Image (cartoon, rainbow over all chains, first blue to last red; front, side, top):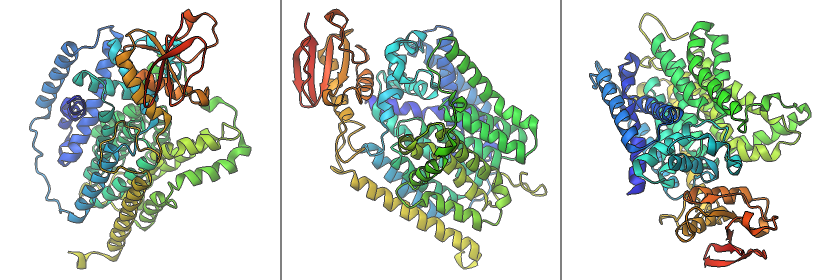
Length: 429
Length: 149
């Protein structure tokens, strides 16, 4: 019962974030895309609420959290009216693609429920931090600054432990199984976002199969990568497929803010998106608006970390660089990137990108993929011999460029029905 | 209609589904390589991440049992004696998540004053030998020791 309740907490997130349905671009998505976007908004709202209660020194309790969440959900439903998608275009059912998605989904859920994809970090720090936050009734400096908690990465961003604490608030006890199973929701949410915005079931099939396999090889379930990939997907599909400037800005900003508050690597991702957009879109004002929430949140978190002298992990880029380590780094990284399958997770989307008739539409996500891959190399050569570091982390770190590549491969085959298309206006440029 | 599909679209369909099928088969192979049982609900979320159990998986069970036995508020640590100090962090952090009503601390046994030593030690798989501690309880995954004053 505890596990069911704890899992239901994640299922409630779309209801909490349903207000985002008032955006015209979201209204045009299918149900999967709308639920996923609302889930991202709900996750951000819940994390923000728990963080604000901690800042105000208000003890988390069901009596405090539930009424606030209920009010937010009711206001969201009011904003989202009418809940039914208006003028839904006729969509061709791709039965084979749906069947493939169902098969992969069953495999993922099986792998999660038989503990074949779990990440050790869930038990080492993501989970224990959430457990302690819940016990303390909030995020406390006393815990984060406790020398006994120094190895729990107190300087890591808080979004995931806050989501786990939300789940614990619903269930009254921490559920390790629901934490692991939430990976399925983040994965399926990512796939639904691509399928819905690109109106492309085939691209969704490749993304689902590739990320399911890569997450399994990386043993990433329950760790920070699944929600990181989810928020990154939202940001990338927003800047790739969403045409309306205001909606694109809001959704991309939500994705970047979520990514930056989920993992340290989220900051690198934000920088990659900013650079790619500045080069390709040449709209500094739009880029500023998209990146501003993430920058403010990251700045506030770093200020908090430094003010309280907590362990801080963002200074890696200022460490010495060992260029002599570059050849070995590339070789080891290539081995890790093979995912024990001769690099098929990369080869298939690269082939589809090359074959794609609309590669121009895919340049932005492809640039993000290249930049985030280069960023991984850049950080690895800060050690004279990063072999162990690469082999232990690269399968997870490379999920970000892999996701961007998968989205690029779908964008290269954009259909006239995708959200970047507007008759008479061409595609997003 | 498939016969109206442009050749390039057909190529895309083939690449997509062949790759997806290969990835799904590879996923099943990976699951199989991680060992059985394949249709039993595992005891912990760490049970099948490797063909053999990691010690940290046993810490989950050991700490879960210890949480019901050891007085609340006590200081506790967890180690695998033969692997110390290399894997200490993974063991005591795992215990920290399983024992929220206790004060889980890093293993440090150099103090001569028992008053500053952890009150309980969870020794996964192997016996723990230290003159300041005596065996308190034993379960299949390990032993619980208490400090001697």
